[in-house]
Image (cartoon, rainbow, N blue to C red; front, side, top):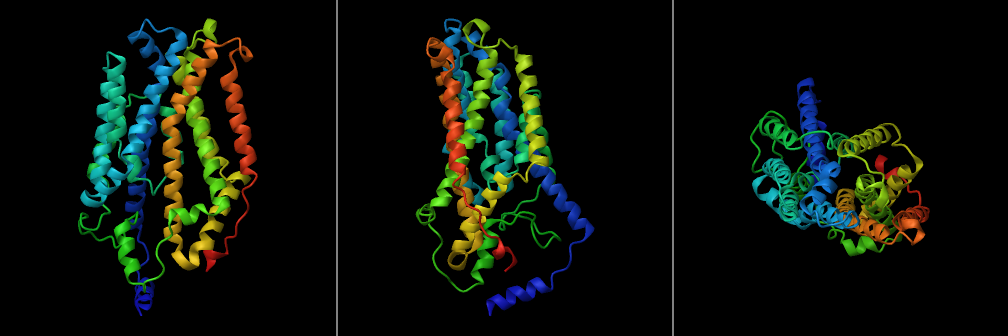
Amino acid sequence: MPLRMADSDSDHRQPPTPGRNNRAKLQLLILCLIRLCEPISFTVIFPMVAFMVAEFNPTHSDKQVGFYCGAIESIFSLAQFSTIILWGELSDRIGRKSVLLIGLIGVSISTLAFGLSSSFWTMILARSIGGVLNAENQALAFSLLPTSFAVGSAIGPLLVAAIAPLLEFVMATLWLNETLPNKKSTNTEREPLLQSLADIDVQESLVPPGPSPTKILDLLKDRNLLVILISYSLLSFQHISLEALIVLFASTPIKSGGIGFSSADIGLALSLSGVMSSYSLLFTSSLEVKTRINKRVDQVSQEYHSQHGILDVLATINGMAQSCGSFVRAIGPITASSLFAFSVLHQNFIDGNSVFLLFACIALGAFLNSLNIKDGLEQWRNT
């Protein structure tokens, strides 16, 4: 009977009006702009971090700078990873919008503090504050926008990163709607743009009780899901590690094994890389590799759909992937920087190219692992 009531309500829903569509587009635009903050705040230090470390620690040789740069780059993601659960719980109590606004202010404070740093430890503290207070990534974990991340990576090295979050803070305060039921104000829109977890719980309460939710350990028993998570983790690890490695390689003097780029040259190179990433996301998203991954996620979801519900499984899988990505982002930069420092210090070993050989092997391993991903079925979408 509850199911019939839900169906009846959906049958009498009014079609979306142009005004509602415009409001929905505005909400998506604001969320995309907020999503820009994290890559901007994360990448803005790349062009100058090596030069700042060398200036604040003149006793360190060019061969030692890499390790300290890796520590600074990793501390942001490590602090962010450590506060994921706390921000999620807080957003359920005070509202999603409030958590997003805290994150925007945190990004501005962190960026300004980093720019005013006068020592290595103040740089570490500033980046830690940015990671702890950067709540918009966790609050938007259900709505990953990779194109916005790529655009942010492109403009991050060129923009004053403290200004963009402040502008987005004003926009979010004025126009972003709250989605937490007990916090949002009454309006004419019958459904929020992004449905909150509490709303989902209310709707699911109308359905007769079913089996208990899928546990992570149950999902991990699926071999192909493990293959996907490993592939995603390796890809994320390579991406963030190579970002840090390229900066070190470009800033290191030629005599020490680098190419001696200036801060401006590094910023331009990183921005061009971000532009190309945006292009690939917009125009090459139908590549077979991505299609196979998406199909396999669909297949895993289909296998558990009859017992656990597709929404619950997709959310769990997405959360597992997010956790893997956050973890490798925390260890990637310091790992790459340490390996680069080792290569520079031991140039007699493979002519100082051991770090590049290692990442080539990791890329080969990721490729071989991806060959084990199997195509799935999509009939459940039409059921």
